[in-house]
Amino acid sequence: MVAQSFTEASTVLLDMDGTLLDLDYDSYFWNEYLPIRFSQIHNKTNNEATRIVHHALEKHRGTLNWYCTDFWSHEFQLDIIGLKTEISHLIAYRPETLAFMNQLVKMNKRVVLTTNAHPNVITLKNVATGLLTYVDEVVSSHDLGNPKEDQAFWHNLQSQLDFDPQKTIFVDDSSAVLNAAKRYGVGTTVHIATPSSKLPPKPCRDHPSINNLMDLLHPSMTLSITS
Ligand SMILES: [Mg+2]
Image 1 (tube, rainbow, N blue to C red):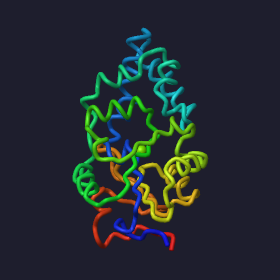
Image 2: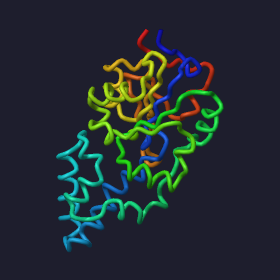
Image 3: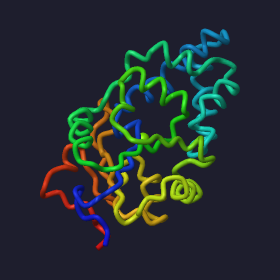
Image 4: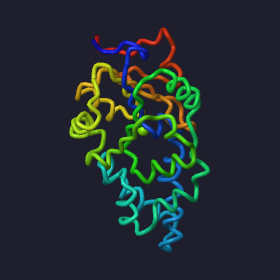
């Protein structure tokens, strides 16, 4: 029987960017800050730099490379983590994340940060927020060799964590990732409709879709739409 409410779940898998942290930092970095710094470092016009950066990003979307800072440092011939650190003061929790995490630690559940972010980005974000103090374990798709979009990720995650899919809730802002988790057999998938503080909500029909993490803890919240 799939967990129908948050209290019935024993394992909680939480995405990082756009779920616990405001996606605006990442959107701003890749779409605006990186092209500006690329143009300065490589002596290109802003338009030229923007075109090169966006074209390259689009080419690798959805792959492990797309999430890999080492790959992009090599591809763009600059230090991605160094550049990300220049604007690390913009890294921020989403509204309600801290309230949610503080409740979660009292609930005796296994809490696993489950992210496509590179380990060095996890470190950067933890230094800025202290996020890792609220989780029991951390899994980066880079350690498992496949992004969350791939079935191989979920098979490898199962080998590593030995979680009960029926008693697991997975929260993410990517419907492609949630679809992959559901296909694998994760019992309860929850979509975050408000990943960025700068964008309007974008609900998803295939999974329960929420604006605020605290909604998960509301007694009337039904999380399964499969049965
Ligand atoms: Mg995300």
